[in-house]
Image 1 (tube, rainbow, N blue to C red):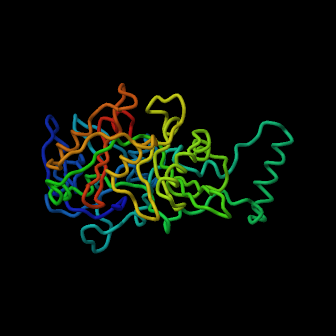
Image 2: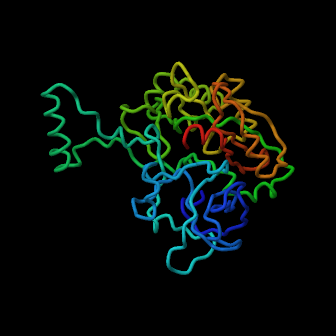
Image 3: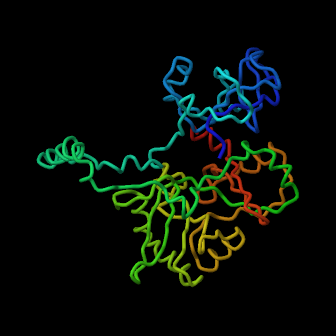
Amino acid sequence: MTNLASIQRILNLEPIEGADLIEKATVLGWEIVVKKGEYQVGDLCCYIQIDTIVPELPEYEFLRARKFRVRTIKLRKQISQGLIVPLPKGKWTENNDVTKLLGIIKYEKPDNNPERYVKPRKPKIWYKKWIYTFKYNYLFKAFPWLQKQSRSPFPKHLVSITDEERIQNMPQVLQQYAGKLFIVSYKLDGSSITIIHSKVLGKSKFRICSRKFELHDKDNDWYKVFTDTNFKNEVLKLVKLFETNDIIVQGEAIGKFNGNHHNLKRDEIRLFNIYVNGKRLNQRDFIETCVKNNIPNCPLYKEITLNHTLPEILKESEIPDLLNPKADAEGLVWRCVEDKMSFKVINNNFLLTNNE
């Protein structure tokens, strides 16, 4: 995964029609608006990606109205994605990570952040308020071991965290994989969910994870969508089909997650990965398995031979959402049929419309 803030090189500079004071710079596969004359082609710079939060410092004061969030914007009809800032003091080379040095953190949407489920909402009844205050302001602070652990780090030793790389961070892939066949699926707008199945004392055990954490209680939206959709039955189909208890599935929890972009009547889980005995199914086998067994999955867009420039592959993603045709699709996920190469292409219209 590319660093949130890193040292990169200015690959190109182009004028912006009707603009005298700004121009378009290219870093990796990203286009960013900068002040004219501030940089030259070949210069090293510090690039801060979109979907990040910068610290509340004077140099970022212009982002206060956006709560210091870096997102996709349009200036003089030119899309700008990210920030280019001066190099920190020191000796730097291309691709050096400066995320921690600059204090940059990843932006998390409220429904993607299980922090809000760690501490229950304060009750309205007076005596329950008193108990709540005593427990969380005094008892658990003095004796933290008394509080039930509601989450733990994501179990990376079992399965990887889901986070496809954006094509703009790896534009070289377009040449390296030119002519190869990719299976392309719709990227759904929701929150990542991982379900781990095993068997303990002859009974099925399910472990539920958000994108970053394993969740140990049931007072959260991830457990709720798992329960409400009776999704354990979908996992048990795979247990029976592959004759093993070692099944892990990963997907997108959609519905009220991220504002119900797909206009659904109820929350759903749509899979994009199936692991059998620790090995991920290739995309063709994954889709065939889901279709034959009626398991909800992120819909197939089409099979495409990669032969695209960066502007062409970005244009390919500018399509309506399959589940809600009145809205823009979030984007597409491309997976090579020959190996594990994959990347996502986010629809810039979606980003602009939804202030992403």
